[in-house]
Amino acid sequence: MQSIFIELNGERTAVAPGETVSSLLESLRRDARAVAVEHNGEILPRDRYAAVTLTSDDRIEIVSFVQGG
Image 1: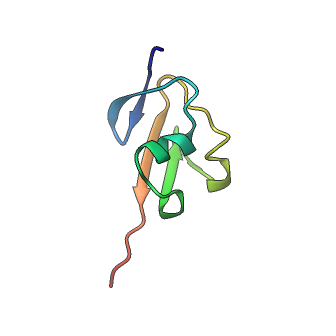
Image 2 (image 1 turned 135 degrees about the horizontal axis):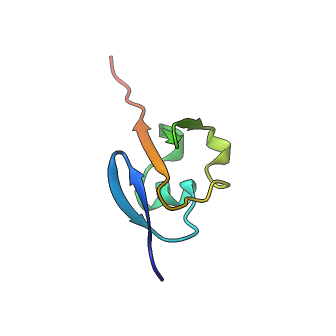
């Protein structure tokens, strides 16, 4: 199976064809409740993570929420 390439947090990254934002987060061991995802310059609502299939040259930014005080 050939990979496709996306830009993930500014770095070219290979992912499997058919990968969704949700499965990408799982493979990165990121909790979907603790991140915000930008897909091609637009904030992606959390309820759409499983529905959005990544395509070649997509730009994904993942930002973690940090607690502190």
